[in-house]
Amino acid sequence: MQWVCDFCGYVHDDGEAPEICPVCGESRSRFSKRYDDEEDLSENQCPQDKSNDADDYYGEYDE
Image (cartoon, rainbow, N blue to C red; front, side):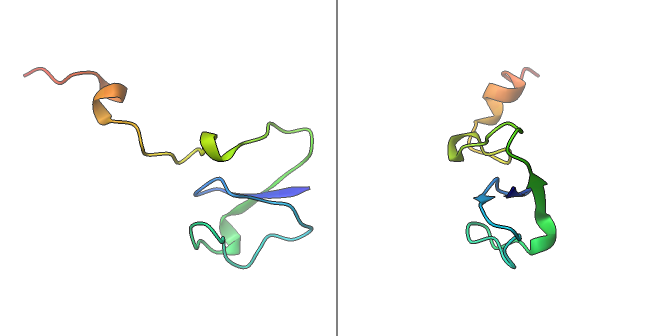
């Protein structure tokens, strides 16, 4: 079983979630269990990735 930080996507391979996420500093309560048969998230697929430009998401803004 793995633990995934719901905020940053960090994956922790251990029986228990860490007290604090070593990547973003969130508390243990922000971790969810993930079992071996679930989809693997890599660092490049962080669910909270905010690196995309807003124009790419919303399209160009026309007044």
